[in-house]
Amino acid sequence: MTEEQNNNGITTWFWVIGWGALVWNLLGVMSYIMTVTMSPEIMAELPEAQQELMNNTPAWATGAFAFAVFGGAFGSLALLMKRKLALPLFIVSFVGIVVQLYHSLFMSNSIEVYGPGGVIMPIMVFLFGIGLIWIARHSISKGWLK
Image (cartoon, rainbow, N blue to C red; front, side, top):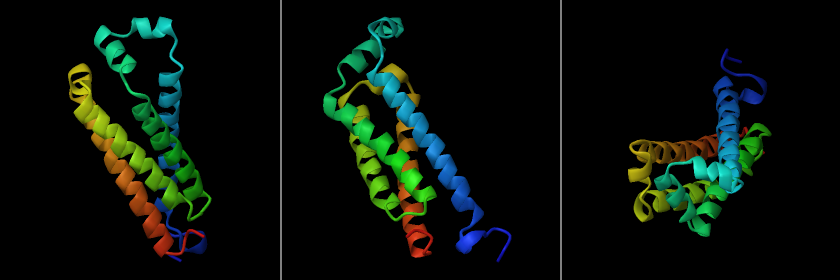
């Protein structure tokens, strides 16, 4: 057993990525919950352009947000529990990411409203989504997930 491996040949980076993915996706869940439960008083404190963007977000884009963050959170839990279910959950999450990304970049004025962060963050989320699918596939091929 090498210094990077622990029980069943699973490397330390697997656990670091798994816990990091869980924290990342739980932050996404918090963001989703804060978005859909925002009170009118808090909404009124946002800049007008941001209020308009949020009020004009279609239900399917908000639903994609939910699939992205909850799929990612449950996928991360499945990964940490060493379950193959992580892969389909990460795929569901990724589909949600793609749908949400499409809306943000091509159907709304989010880049105008949020500036460069309106592009950088969604692309970063997209890359993380790809990475989590790769991690799950790699872990399955190594026999780490049952």
